[in-house]
Image (cartoon, rainbow, N blue to C red):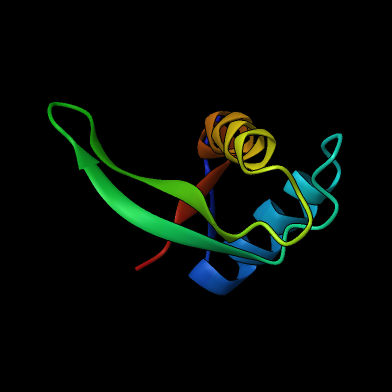
Amino acid sequence: MANIPVTREELSAKVIAAIRQEPGCDGVQEVSINAITVVNEGSTWRASVLDGGTANADDARRAADRITELYTRLFRLME
């Protein structure tokens, strides 16, 4: 399946919406989308929670990790 190209802003909106759907994470306020290069695999991206708001920090981090794993298969960050 081909990844859908999206801008950083579009991806950020999709990721934060998905994280807020995770239990206890509806208070997350801000995420960061970071482009990364994986040796022998090429370019990809990773989401990190910058402002967890009222969410538990560990829950928010785990949610961001789950969403990143799922969404890196679906979306390709356009640079």
